[in-house]
Image 1 (cartoon, rainbow, N blue to C red):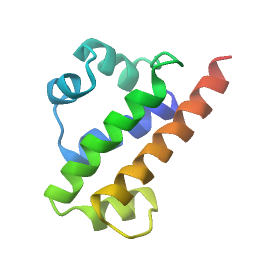
Image 2 (cartoon, rainbow, N blue to C red; image 1 turned 30 degrees about the vertical axis):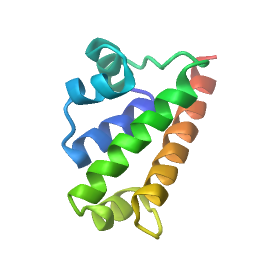
Image 3 (cartoon, rainbow, N blue to C red; image 1 turned 45 degrees about the vertical axis):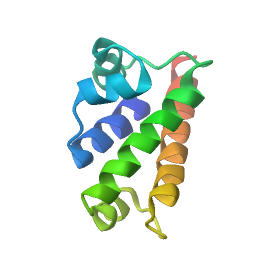
Image 4 (tube, rainbow, N blue to C red; image 1 turned 90 degrees about the horizontal axis):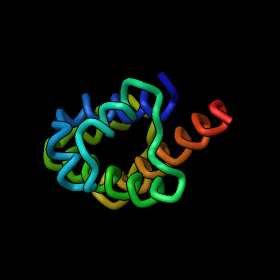
Length: 107
């Protein structure tokens, strides 16, 4: 599994998100998301920024709704503040960095 898949899986598990819910929000079939998590595949480079932004927003909303900001911070070594916008920005950066590492390893 690549770094991107690892981070994505951790976020899905932390938030308890369903792939079907994520699929509806980002506009990709569940099978694509599953491949990103488990098969070392990556979103297309052109689409990755938008995909990562949508994913970050979904996960941040869930973390705030479930009052899991402290758990998120501990799992990802993130610092406050813990409002939805800050968490979304942190998640976006995590996904972006993981994507870059994974993309470089496939090149």
